[in-house]
Amino acid sequence: MSLYHCFKPSSKAKDDSLTVLPSPEGHLSKVVPPSTIVAANEKLAEAMAGDTGSDRIGSSQGTYENYTPTEKAKIANYALLHGTAAALRHL
Image 1 (cartoon, rainbow, N blue to C red):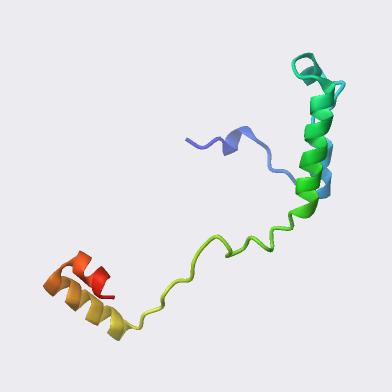
Image 2: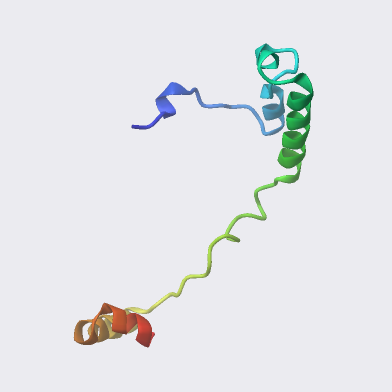
């Protein structure tokens, strides 16, 4: 079950997301020291300022092989004759 129905979509810009950080004078300060909240907010603001997202696109995944239909047929035939594991080792 998805939790998306519990949250409203945010139309805020990326810079506005820093306004939702916990306040050192808020309810959380009863549980966590305010200095810890301030330090966490600063670290998060630094991380969000440096994260553009464009450098992460495609960097975590490798490249994929593109096979023509003829090559796919040859691979499938080899796998049929020798088994899937042998076809993987062969290629």
